[in-house]
Image (tube, rainbow, N blue to C red):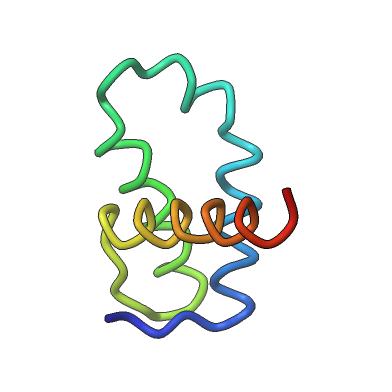
Length: 70
């Protein structure tokens, strides 16, 4: 399992927020969406995350939030 720093998580959340309309208009072409977010994280941090890892991390963050705060 990939280890995520607080900065990487912040970029993940911010990029999803910025691209939220794109996310909801993609239909099922989410692979490209998550790939662009992975590219942004990797470019800024010298990491090698892929789109699937970003999707899984974001899904887990949402799940954990819903379990703990909703």
